[in-house]
Length: 171
Image 1: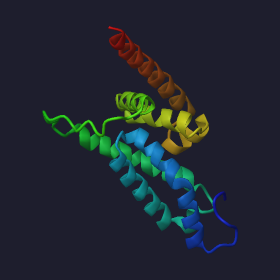
Image 2: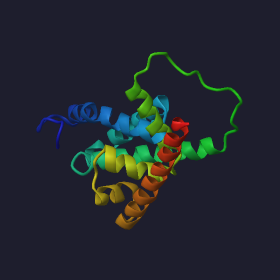
Image 3: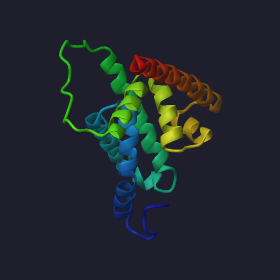
């Protein structure tokens, strides 16, 4: 297993694994949720669940299990949020002076939030986590055909969204 020293005790092995994966899981969770705090909560939940099952998972697929927990948590949060009533208040715009790269990233994150949770997960797992279609299918519990079709539809929707954004900026 990458990220752990062979022969370590299971607790130290888990700690090494978690330290080596936490940052990547957090970036993926931010792309799934669009929110830093929610993403941190999802990653923390996933790491706790992996820790509880480490004796079994350490020799199997702890990364896939953690990704699945993060994805399921993101979907659950999305479903709960869908039932919430929006307020008239706008959130604070944040600190001034953010770079153009950050703004472009914010556009991507905003566009991802317009996708269904499964479409968002497929794109994040494919293009951010660089997983194969089979690995994505295994992580999400769907067929590779579903992964391909969800990716196709999601990419088309993102292209349409960015075409609209580009047209609005040109005005």
